[in-house]
Length: 124
Image (cartoon, rainbow, N blue to C red; front, side, top):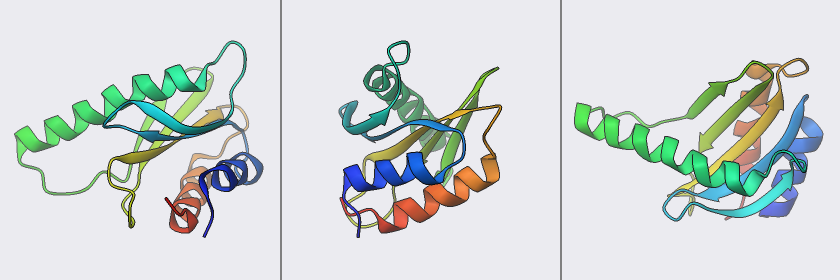
């Protein structure tokens, strides 16, 4: 089992094109841990903003009566991919892993696969 810091380090090291990673509580909007980012890309601000995305999708699903669970949410920009993976394991309720990828270097299928493996090993 990996703790938050170890899991975020693994995400940056093992996922091609990863430039930032965070574990976020979408009930409060707080990042419980961040790794990477840059002066021009504040992961804490991005994490807080993406809680609104998660909440909006969950509300929409509720209004539509959809019973499935969100695996991940993908936001594509011209030069970046933003991958949000809701945690479903023990103690992960209300949390998501947030990954920022360089679109020129990333392989989305592999990134999703690696993030799923990191989620399985994460101890919250």
